Length: 130
Image (cartoon, rainbow, N blue to C red):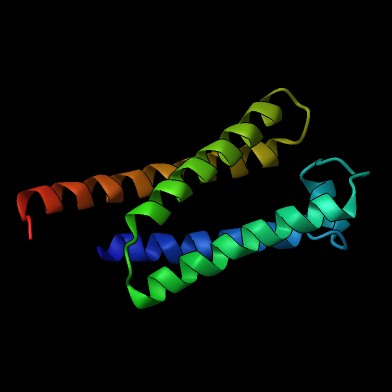
């Protein structure tokens, strides 16, 4: 695993953990800052928070054990792209704050970094078949 990708995984873990806290139902201040809907069912917020926290733990685990799993990286690319594009789209429409759009660009940047790593892995495997 390249050192830059390991650092990216650690950073993604920190960012995802922060996002999980923001979506946690009791933490209204974070959602208010990002201009996310205030009257949201706590069940849905709990599910979103848990989903994001699970990814944070997975990123941390992969980075600490230096494991590069192509399937997980692919799923991460897709989820980061979807979440990031959603935040950017609604942020630019002013449905939520520009901070949310900035967070979306961060997720898109991580999706690109993950895609670069996945592409590098595929190239390394095709040039050195075992």
